[in-house]
Amino acid sequence: MLSKNQLGFLYMFISVCAFSLMDLIVKWSDSYPLGQVLFFRGFFGMVIYFFLIPKDRIKNFYYTKRPGLHLLRCSSGLIALIAIFIALRNLPLATVVSISFAAPIFTTIFSIFLLSEKVGLYRWLAVLVGFIGIIIITEPGLTNFNLYFIFPIIFCLGLSYVAIAIRQLSTTEPVWLISLNFSAMITLASFFTIPYGWIMPDFRDFILLSLIGVFGGVANLWLSQSYKFSEVSLVTPLKYLALVFAIIFGYFIWDEIPTIKTLFGALLVIISSIVIFRREISLKKEFSISRNE
Image (cartoon, rainbow, N blue to C red; front, side, top):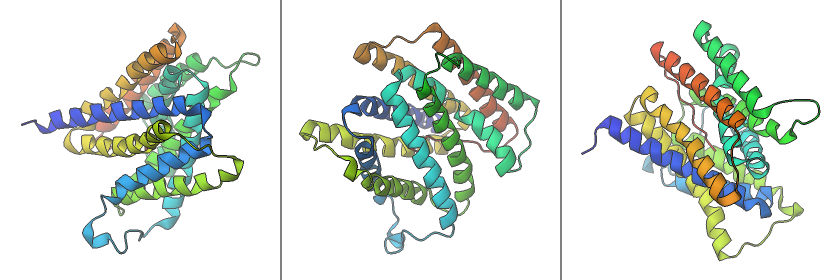
C-alpha cells in the first residue's frame, strides 16, 4: 500500500510522462494544420472530462456562477496552447521545454497586480535569475534573434494568467468544469480553421492525433491528483524530468543536441522556479501551476 506522498510522486511522474508524450506527438504532427491538431487536443480532452461530471450535475453541468472569468481563463489558455504548439513545431524540443519552466516567474509578477500579493526580496531575486536564464537560452539580438523564441514566452505569459484565473475560479467552481470549458473552447475555436484546409488522416495518424487530447487531458488530472495526495514542494521538482525526456526524444528522433547555453539557461530557470515554489510554501500559501493544456 503506497503512502500519500508516494502516490503523489507516482501521479506527478505519470503526469510528466503524459505531457512529454503529448509534446512529442505535437512536434511530429507538423504535416497537419495547426487548427486540426487543436481540434484533436480539445475534443478528445473534452471526452475525458465528461466522465468526471457528478450524477447530480448531468442536467446542468454547464452551469457556472462566473462565466466572464471562465471566458478569460479559456481565452488566455487558448493563446498559450497555440503558442506552445507553434514553438514545438519550430524549435528544438529541449529549448521549448526549458523556456516553459519560466511560467511561475510570470505568475509571481501577475499575482502582484491581479491578487494584490506582496512579493519579497527572495522571490524578486528568483524572478531576476529566471529572466537571466531566459535571456541566455534565447540570446536576443538585432541580427540573429529567432522569432520563434517569442512563442514559448507567450505560452508562459498565457499560462501564468491561467494559474491566477484558476486560483480565483477554484473557490466556487469544480475542477472538472474549469477543464471541460477549456477543452470545449479549443474544440470550437478549431472549427474556424476548417476553411484553411484540413487533411484526412489515415488510421495510424488518427490514433496518434487523438492521443494529443487524451494525454493532455489525463496529464492535468494526474497533476491535480499529485497535488491532492502530496505537498506541492515535494512533488514539484519531478516536473523538471520533462527536460530529460525532451533531450532524449529530441536526440533520438530529430537529432537535436541541446547546447551548453540552453542547458545552463534551463538550470537558472529551474532554480528560479524552485525558489519561488519553496518560498510560497514557506509563507503557507497554496501555490500550484498546471500546464492546463
